[in-house]
Length: 263
Image: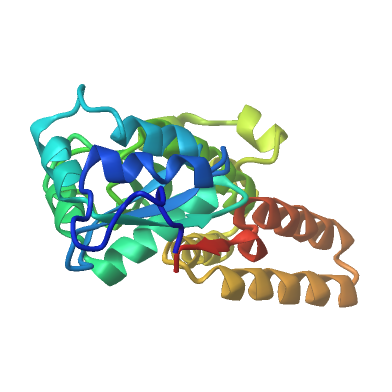
């Protein structure tokens, strides 16, 4: 585990801002996930950061925090870090750790309806991917909530490149007579004008659900198998499209880039 400054002693351990400040010289500007633990070793909170050092330095400041965050900082006796190569990878890793560890302050976060989730809305035959806030009253699969709306927006952008799911409203979908710009830039499969069957689109929705649930390797293997089959059947245009999706997935995933710190 990353060690704070050497003046910290066992018989009188530091807590809070001073303890957190001791980790700053071990961090850089990589994206990643951090854990805040109390003196008994219980995980208080799991968070993700686009820039780990910048995020942790905010916790080291003595002022400017909400009551909830200030209380969490005061209880922090140690921290653990995992660096990643992409922000999207950090976002998904954060969610998997939250599900596994169920930290107290993340549970409080889940009760706050102001934080966004990613929703695969399934009230329509062709599911819509979008950012969602508020109660979970719409039929579909929810992922989150996430503390950073900006990270959700950037992740949605990356996911559309991989899974080609529509983000338009149902009314826009029904009114389309030709593909929109997102189809032209390979961020949507244009189900609105029949360029993809309901079955194939449903498969992509399932792939997106698996990816958001952390089953990234399986999704990549499935796409590779589909590309191989398309090539063998001389469906070269489909094989090329699958190749592009695999490339986009690799850029998002970067699973080999996880570098444990403090684990």
